[in-house]
View 1 (cartoon, rainbow, N blue to C red):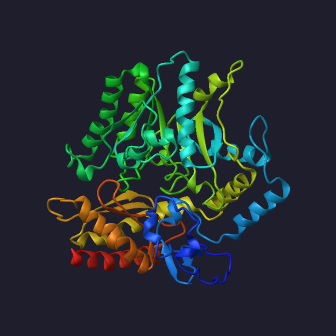
View 2: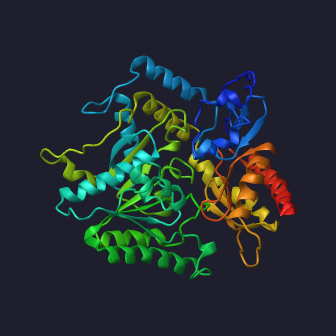
Length: 463
């Protein structure tokens, strides 16, 4: 697989914490940088990133589940430049432009069933926000105005805008911003490693987990529930794949109660699991797909909500209008980059590459199960979580103070220092998440495993 198309010399190192004092970092404890500056990443090449001192790291998270085709792809930069020279910007507010038209056609052709209507945003949270608003207005237009509520899963992350954050199932992310948008409810996720029932029977567990959605719909009243938002593989908590039959059952439940099924594929779409849209991997057709990240491999921001013809139909009648939009949604430059990115997927058979090598990725990470601190390895495609435990036999996890010391006090910094950029996370039980660029192969898999083995062995000795 191609890994680089550029040569860039490293710039002069950034000097001291003061150099970054004006920059407010996302999801970061800013007090941690009062004396020491944050790492400064200056360039990328293939599956590697480089800091301002010239040190190289394996990008084990594809930036943030984003850089599917790898860093430094000149063809994407050139696509952006060509489009900017021709038409740098024009909104999609009652007007269209060629790049957005072509991209909508490409996405509709790749999406399953009759998901043919593409509403562009600038990111994933905006796509989720769009889907909820579209669902609420859809039911008003078809004469069911009470159907406004949303069901999602425990520990699931769906974005940071007020509506998307309300759908999110992580209380710690929500409490400082309350009150949020009312009408959202949680059901159990598909973490079979921590299952309270049917932990030894994946099919029965999947049926049980799906049936909890129906129980919630019935409890709230089917005439009040608009949509169910589910990730194909849940991100937060550490990459929970669906049990066998889970999505088939969820689809049946949503159809029975006239509830829209939204497949939140902001992370899982565009090859992360080896298919353009992840619902294809698991054989279900949703009513809406939300997507972003990998659509441009991060070379320019864009997102989308893709709706079925059924959802779109009432918006086509009379004077109906979806009074919603974003200035930069479907931006010409981002749309052009997305088209070039999709071309690379086809030219380099990246989906096929993931499907052909996902087994090797899993088996390489599963070598770590011989370590006493590794309790579970789970995921799909190029999207995996490694759950850390105090006791493998009992699955005893770490308390809040221990998790703080383990993840932030040691692992995050030690893994990065050892040359691996990934995520050590405790939204749920402590996990390490890995989602490398889709160009990776056994060489990178082995490097990840070796770095993780060394650092996790040291972490256990410290415990």
